[in-house]
Image 1: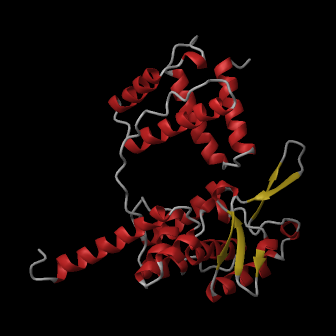
Image 2 (image 1 turned 30 degrees about the vertical axis):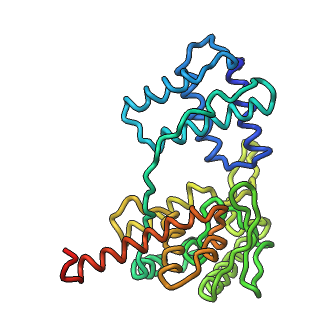
Length: 305
């Protein structure tokens, strides 16, 4: 039987899933953060009796355990979101977490691949199996469009406009956006779809990258490829061309944006292509450009060293 506090958390997570339509990964992160917070409190302390001091003590305890400021900020954001929800539901009158300042997080420069590294990466799935065709398309779409991994796995064939070379995707916050792709991606996509036709069960799926798994009743459930599967596919090929373990599928999105800006693309246009709500999210890529300029200066100018 769930305790009152567990019921509150479950209601909140249901709200995130059904009304806010957050991804399963995001909901899991919220759940971990909130369970950790409530486990730090006295078992009999009710939601209405929690104070801002309780939250401060929780964060201080994490800080003493050398938890990064980025993680602390995320956990505080999870707590603030829960209390905002409780205020809206009229379970409490005030969000006691609202006035707690979030730790300042230094902006991390995105990890990205050079144009040469990207070329090597895209050459890697060179076989003739269905999986080779699938993997080639996954890598090409990441770099050609700047898609998030959560967007890529949910692409439906019906949302691809082949003549106009556009794809309608469902982005963060359940917002639809149109992404464009070039001739190279179009060619790789066409080759993949031809091979896909050879598998009858795949033809029943609306998803570009289907995944069929057995249920308890021994029937096949049609779904899209799992995020973790795609993550592992991309990591496998990245390890062939780089020893940097920080590189991930998201690094291809970073590479997409960085290469556009390095070749003179307008910042606002890149913002729209990435599906960013705020320009400040896109401006981090201008810092990459500045770092690159400084490196060139330091290496080449007589007074740079």
